[in-house]
Amino acid sequence: MRLRIISGLLLATSFLGAQDVSFPKYKVVKGYPPKEAAAPMNAAADQGYRLLFAARLAVMRLDAAPPDTYRYLPIPDAGGQASFLNALNQQGALGYGWVEGSTMLEKAPHPRNYEYKTLEGLTPTSRDRSYQSLLEQGFHVVVERGFGPVFIREVGGTRPAESPNSVQVVDASRTSNLMKDISELAARGYRYRGHEVSKKAAGKAVSMEQCGSACGGPLEYRTFNVNNSGQLEKDLNLLGRDGFHVVPRSLGFPPHLAERPARHEQSYSYRVIDATNQRAIEQSLNAADREGFVPLEFAAHVGWNVHVFVVLEKAMVSAGP
Image (tube, rainbow, N blue to C red; front, top):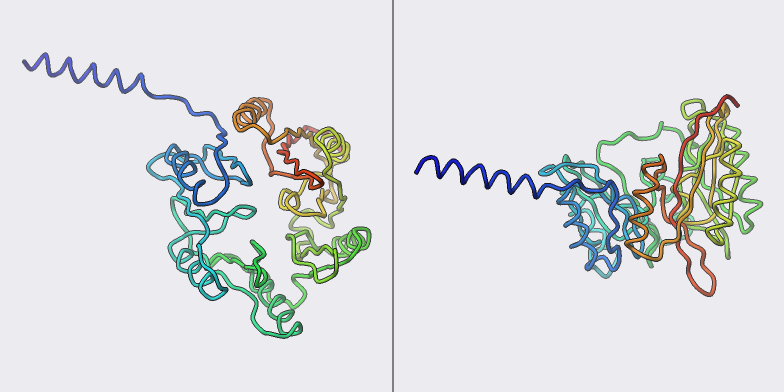
């Protein structure tokens, strides 16, 4: 009887071992709408995947091992500014941070806490002061709602130096004027921080933060367009050969930027794939991974139709600047 029990246990162990699978590095799941996307994201997260970026589809990477896995929630379904902000801060206190560029909240295996804020004041002047104050306190914009931008900050995280000029917002109606302002700030030791809400008709705005030599500055910036996969891949590779690399956070909103440090000894290769078929994207990402490419973010061309692409980057060995 004892031998039969031991044999049964050995067979069971062998069967379970046969069920083990090697998961691919990247998985693509449904990304929208948030309430429907939470279940497939969490199913993938249970296997160790973490959300990188999302639109209609979500790209996830194998970053964890059960039981220490990530968890996802859709953004709160609340109407007004006060109730929405209150619901966000309740989740932030539980360790849920907003995944930028998506409609999902993420809780890490060893979570940190987050706080959310919106602009205060009724007049344009008071809201401008509130905007600048939040940026200087270490908050940054994660989304634009009907009542204005929503800001996030990690509780106890590193904050910028106490300087009234540590963060500058540049806003212009023309891309050429905006790039001129960006270049001038970059020459003074500033670095691109993120997209901001423009106050000008059909304008564009970004925030820049002091960085200097700590991030390889002074930095140079170039802008590029997103029209189609062939054009985008060609333009990015031309920039990459000159030592410019894509700023992932800029892919969501124009101006789309590539930056280059003062000592540019690195070059970059780019690949762009159409984000139309879920299975095809997943296969392409995992095939490109074997060649050393990493996915950066979705980029989109908005015209009569919306065309979405995934931008992938590979750092190349360079002989010198």
